[in-house]
Image (tube, rainbow, N blue to C red; front, side, top):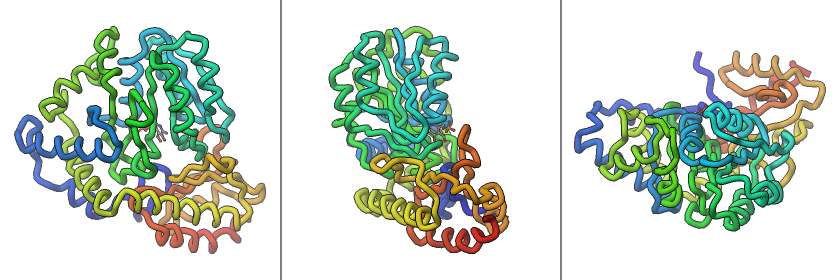
Length: 357
Ligand SMILES: Cc1ncc(COP(=O)(O)O)c(C=O)c1O
């Protein structure tokens, strides 16, 4: 039995997306591919308010997260974290043989502009990494305010993971001034996993040229040279790019403002359901994710059993990630879901909760 996915990625895929992936294969060096590539990257630039190139990386998000630090850390990287994925980025940076320091907010709290300012004021860093929406905790860091701080440090590459927020919230990269803004498509884009997208500033592309040991697969210079010809350095996940083309057209016909409002409405409905049942929200007000809700156990619910029973009814929910597993649970509300999909889940959970308390 297929379980409908309310986990924070991979997400439930709409049937029309699978249909788009079934288009007959083309070669990536054929003019037909260049047309799709151009349409997709133009759509992504429109979505992200940028005229910088947007690369299509056939990898999960961590591939291009690793690539970003390999291209842009020449001196030392400040890795800011507020959960599992952002903390892992520090580890990944070290494993690439690069110098990096970890600045960690407590789980459940955001990275603050003050933390960023304090670290960068030391003058030790030429790059920083930030995760906008920490999927492990459901906490969104204040990207606008952090971007305002980053304007004072133009020599520090501003590398941002919007893996679980891109397409669900407005991202105006021209205004934010990010050097790298990346996402995997298996979250709010509503696509199967295997592709990441990455907008890179002119400043970052120029810097990358003088960074040693960039490797080949994620080398920004390779990406840029190929992108100029509407192409990729190596064979891309063409079926996923067909599906991304389809999803972007769907997003623009829904209307971006409507899409953002739909995500806000699903988040509000989920928070209300969670609180109505006595589960405290993990994130403080003002920095709650719009794509997933992370709630604390109320101390009397067997979350593992709830997850199991929901699974038997055909619904996949999550019972916490990393160090907060089973102390919290997460319900995702992103991509092609609507408030009606959330209500469908709540009806099932309403029936199951008395059995697990
Ligand atoms: C915020 C965030 N960053 C990075 C990742 C890693 O993405 P991937 O598994 O596609 O490499 C995830 C995965 O859930 C994530 O939520």
